[in-house]
Image (cartoon, rainbow, N blue to C red; front, side, top):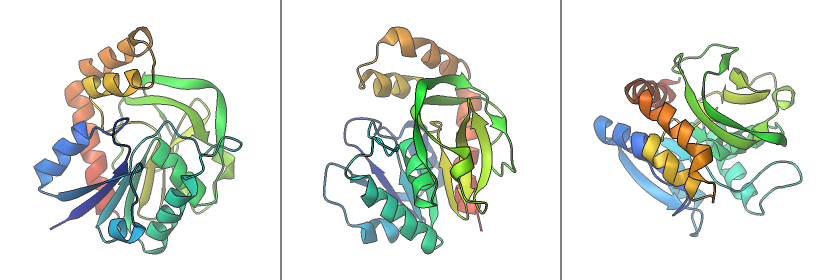
Length: 222
């Protein structure tokens, strides 16, 4: 049976939502690990797929959280072991640092349910809108040549891969309701996130299909 290890917070950006639907639909066994607990990298590395979810923490230059190196080292071990890996939002920034790239703080947040600019082979990332909400970004020019940049938005790398490791700055795992709870949990008013939730809900079936395709494609990488 395919096994999946998921690293997240306990109470923010932790809901699996569409990702959970995909795991159950495929019959995969998954184990949760939490940043607030002590976790052993070897326990995650024993799985077929490692997923790192989002966080209000930062790994941007000058803003690095003290524990970010733990996740960077875990990700480097995934890459060295040719492990299937998916980093979402903060998890993508962790991947960017793990491959030698730089993460920078934006002047303003990149927010919206929007199309990204496809700049490279997109394997399972299908055309259509994705939900973006980030103030830190992986800097395009900092990534090594071996890293394949797939998509950009507002000057940021929002989809890229290094072998079997994939990073997406957007949130394929959320539906409109879980998005609202995630952003509200950061203390942001519904006036700001409500329109993004509504746009996501209006494209619920399309977004879910694209998310399933993305998740499938990460495990299909050879």
